Length: 523
Image (cartoon, rainbow, N blue to C red; front, side):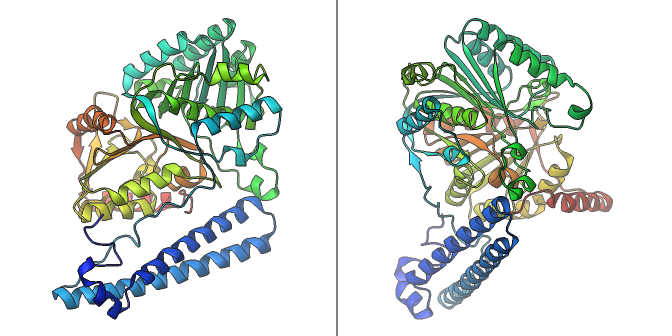
């Protein structure tokens, strides 16, 4: 934050002059209300597009959004010009144009639950047989302070999660986007089959597209992935798939099928949880630079609530409908209590967007440093906020893959690099050890006061349209661990970005990046 009262104000000592110029606190309040009105209108327009077949309603909501957007932009422009005029009269210097319209103000979620309330909601749905609808997944959790958090990367994670899975006694629940019938896929399938035979209740919530079960090949022949999931089911593992098309109940929803459940989580006996970006694929294990956070404490109950509600939403059934049994199997009291602050944060289509809100809030409020690792930074609003942070003197650093996982999205991200570099952002192109140039991790830390790590990219698809989950923490010691064990190591094995030198390279980047913009969902 600036050491002033915000973009639309100056220091307290000139408040009288602001009133003379028309830039009063009331005006600032009007701007904030206009912004919130615009965001509400956008939400209603999006809902009309995704949930209604009535095109008249869509047009009404679109016109309302455009009117609210115009009103907000006009008001903020007028106020900005008034502020610049005051600044010039006081100092003799015109203030540099601001790069964001307003510091982000988090909207209050419709339902903020304690950990216990989340548990009770899940158990009630599980034992009553009552249908779980999309609204039930719309959860925002309160912070907890009894957790232990450990950042894990590479083989440290793979060995750790394997050991924990093998030690499971009561339950294993997994939510997974990327899956393949390769060496890693079969290794974990066989491990889970062994646990199911031992009497452990094993649940797998997979995204149908991410599991390679929604392609054209699936219609024409039996794929290796279909054989993998046949093995799962034949060995007692309870599998459900998420796909928007089959969950849609209206024509509008069926047309708007482009949503994914992009979350990656492992939970063992309801006591140990992992959240992050690794997938059950050999390439993820061997070639991706990624991370997971191993969690213990109440935050695991929050993780479990979201996962089991998704399982029930997608048609799953638990082995028992006895509340005491469900509680003991999936929601035991934490065996190990720590002292770290943590909460699970979710992005839910047409619902809460806590991960997105955290990104905006922390980028806007960072004062000393802001470090981001992400392969897809294509959302224009976030790019503007990141640039604004650097311009106000924050040490902003991005870790981006030197070897692209997705060339088009990579070109879209690099299209913004010139703007970010001019603002003062340091862009580190991660090369790492051999074979680890492909950054897949998604994380953000700020000022040794905040960390968010999980599945959420910084493209509009992830921010507004996918199911995503990150663990967020305000524990300074955990943030310092992430800074030391992830970012500082990554900076050391990266090279600072250099723009394309030849005209042909610049033309190619501009062309590919511009085309890729059309692939990013509107915000």
